[in-house]
Length: 364
Length: 268
Image (cartoon, rainbow over all chains, first blue to last red; front, side):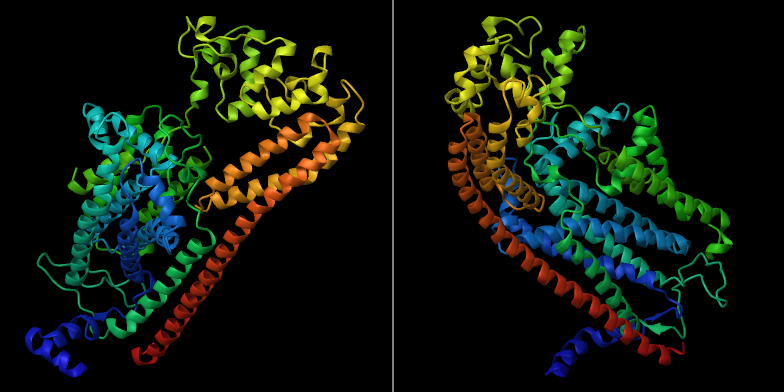
């Protein structure tokens, strides 16, 4: 029966060939390491977000009068609603951890270099879209944290010269965070950004597949090379098959990552959420000690370090620009970390600075 | 900047969150004006900031009346300004909000002795730096200002068990609240019982205290039963969660072992 079905499709679509070319005959570098599994981990996590998000959509009501109660109902009355909501909310944080690890590993191995610039840029946009999804999702429960975090976050855009005030009004749909803000953030969160993200993930994977997996720059056999100006798929003759050899490694890391994720969901579900996340929004009472999520603490503290917000914003913009254009700035063929002392110094100092400023922001 | 940079730049702007801002209770002309006055007039503001009233957003005008939005009309009696109550007026002054407590107090020994200098609210609770109601307010230092401590000590002993129960229920509800459990109804029940409990000892009658606290304990027990049922459910979640995490971990190890079997054919 199985053979009949496969034969039916194979004779019409040539699926055996597709599967061979992309699974068993798709060869990866022999020294491929565990960091390359983060892509598969991220796809799994994004799929969980989509699935739990769709289930939450069944019960969530996107208007200020009912949003908080609907989330409370999901948490307390809907069968397994607490699980869906906690998976979705904690999952957002776990995805950011995985995205940052993925980005840092790519930087360490210089996999962003020619001919993979587009892979890097699309990955960078995916990271920022994930931040955008976190931010828009933050408002939806219409809690005290949601309301005031969004109020202050959108307010910061007002520091931009000339267009600042108009930009704030545009984002909020009025002078204050209100029903219109919830409406547009909801639309962006459940439709606009996921569609864009889906397309970008598709493009990112297409780039990976077309360019070929980059060879890890380690081991005595590794040599730096110049890539030609015309298209060339990087082959790995004598490499290991993607399926089943590497897929099983992907599975192992996915299992470990999910174990870490579910350990938080079941044993520390409020790890990422302060008390104000459980109180309904009250536009007339500002809760004390509002802090951004851990991944935005660096931006929050950067603004406070400088005497003027516009300087802080400028430095953040410059940093993000440098990061986005990294493959076009760091263009040498050398990819071995220890042959790139200047880059590695900046890399380590950059990570330490990010952590230090974030801790400072947390305790400030 | 490229499109990616523009998106990154704009998104970055979203993430900037603020310094904590003051509560609305602080935003009154009373606070604004008195804060800048000489020490005697400014002292109530500093004292109020340490109070349970400030913590709950109860501001000057909530007790003293007046218009908290207008410098000109803030202390105008026509706008409901009451000023400072006399010693004997304090129970009625506080009793506008603390109705049950005032009733018990007036029926008790302290209330009956009010005209003869009997203790009223601020003697034990303080005035602007109003202290949170707790058994610590019944202490030798405070009580012996007016009389011996024996009777007060007996009342405190009778109340202490219930006080521990109230605090335990409160902590448990707070714990559940932090996990997204709907506890509003139970909080309402606790609020009711806490008020009843606080009212009891204002009558300063040992026998009545003993009788009434058993009723409060019974009601607290019912809330405890609800909390216990929720805890059973939460523990079940943890049990299933632990098993799932264990299975995933096991799956990861098995996958790694399978992966190691490919090493020979790969020539490692």
